[in-house]
Image 1 (tube, rainbow, N blue to C red):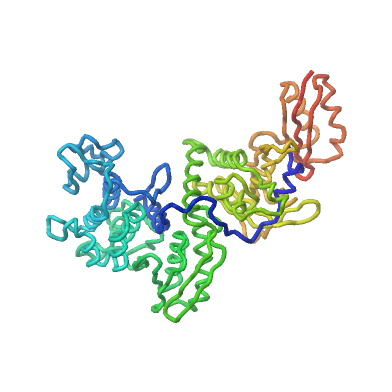
Image 2: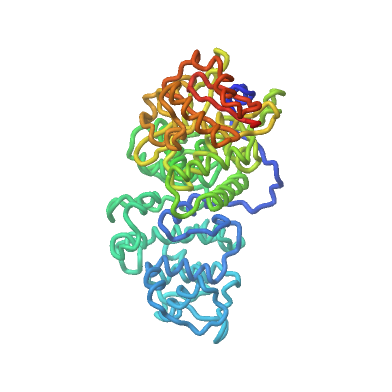
Length: 560
């Protein structure tokens, strides 16, 4: 099946510049403030979430707090391999080694002699006590008491007054658990000159410097670790362009607006000029880490001389972002399996999108395409979208599955006219390939979607036949090894090769076949019927030919 059915008409439709859209569900969910911190802790291997995602809106349990404490102590490997025991009979298998380690070290007790109550809610005072222990403070040594652990954290500067007040006045959720863990990592240990994160990276060596750097909290060595940038939600400070980028990345991932950045000690260049470049760099970093190709639509910044106040207009609201990220994890868990090659992963994600989403054709005809259709949320959650949404959906799934992907902004041609368009470039084994999932989502004359691989891993030369982009901005795609037709041995060199391939398929009574001819000449295929009927076995068939890429598809073959 080919794109010159109705699919091409819609697949190349112009890329709308408006990304912002409004919720289609109720807004009853609690506001999530610390998505960025969760991403940072995920990079460090401290906070992994569950099969449902980070679940930041949920109240944490005692068992989850135990896991976090062991990781912050740098003792997860020891806990998992030491075969320690505890007397509690209600601890699930996954939490057993963590509870056992803390019990043997005298860092936690049970709710009775035989129960730990692992599913009971974890209070903020209990978890802050855990964090103080990770920072080498001791209750038995008289450093603090668990019911006044927040006051101790305030005295030590782990929390500021605003954070202390907020934690005392709100329900303690995994969102807040992540936040104060993030602050503790940047705090110095008792009577020491290094932070908890520096200890885990440099002294314990349980977190790699690369993972620490990816979190945005570490740049390699005690002297270069940035100061604590976050004092409380919506209030930041930055002294140079790098810190400004970290601040903006955090604020964007938390979808804060407005927020303030104190720059009274700024040592860089013109802070307003650097704000714009730092914001773009933050967006690029977010795209690399999460797959969200476009997180904000526009911004407004006021500069008073010692502080910036930024207002951001976002593509998503916080609930949509959490719903999308949860859906992405579900999809990857469903279609990606151990032992898959990168090619197999790419194909599985490509097929999922095409089988579970459709081009927003009805709205296209009405001229009423909603902004959601230009996003991964529209394609993956709502099941409809246009080219930008398809490209972002593939990009975000690739990132979650561990594949390198880019979103290409360019144009494509239909009936002699060029329109704005978006697609992907994917890296496999060090080589780059062009991928257009939207153009592979064919809409047949029946109106049903059909799976196609015409634009699955093309090189630049082939993609240039009907796509155009600024080649200086993207890596060159020259390889052919993982082109769908090459990889699956469905490519022949010329007309003679095509005849041999066709004869073999008909001899095996194939119901359909698709083959790509490298040296394609349209004049060779003027009388396809003579090849199909010469054996006397075929009663009827349908076919289509992509002259640009030399792909011949024959389908609905009925044999005598």
